[in-house]
Amino acid sequence: MINSNSVYIAWQAPDTRDWHVVGTLQKRDSGYTFKYTNGALKSTKFIKFSGMNDVHETYVSEELFPLFKNRILSPKRPEYPQFIKWLGLEDKNISSLDILARSGGLRNTDQLQIFQRIETDAEGQFEYFFFLHGLGYLNPVANERVSKLQQGEALRLCLDLQNSYDKNAVIARAENPAQIVGYCPRYLAHDIKKILLNSPDSVALTVEKISDDAPYNYRLLCKLSGILDANCKMMLTPEDEFNVIE
Image 1 (cartoon, one colour):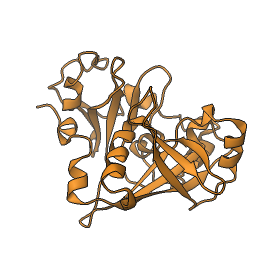
Image 2: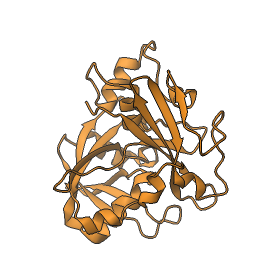
Image 3: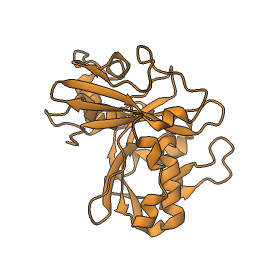
């Protein structure tokens, strides 16, 4: 169980393809609150969410806002238990924000993704879970390699510096035999790239769960873990983007 009390919303600008942190959703005793963050001011292409037209406002609701509720599979659906299993969230006490944080709240109709921030403890240690992207574009040999991965197996993180679509792209590669098995999520790639350039031995990526019966988006769950020093933490996504607009 991950006990998410807050998540952030990442949005990809259509012109630059850069990802910005545009809002934060929090769970309170009385319901939910949403606030825009400074990342929403970074691009003139960003369109405010329906019913949330004032970037200075704090939006409050007893129930989860439709924008986010529509990104969660209904518990009434027969495939819901299987969906939760794919996410690796089989605890009965999981919340809607747990599901959003783990699944990313993906939809084909927009460029939004829901995520938790990489948080470190007093010693700089962290663990972060995410699904690898791009599995649907892998060839049959690569997909067969994915199926043979084992829980706890180490994966290599490689910078895809000549990627014309995403200058921050980070590849995940299996070993013995070497095979690309996916990409790190684009909204995280900037931070992972910075970590690798600053201290490549400080982080490790391992297989957390394989679900061959899942859609590609939820097939390969990984765990990123490591220790970040103060210098490395300062190089991650600018703190300013996470700050709410007052």
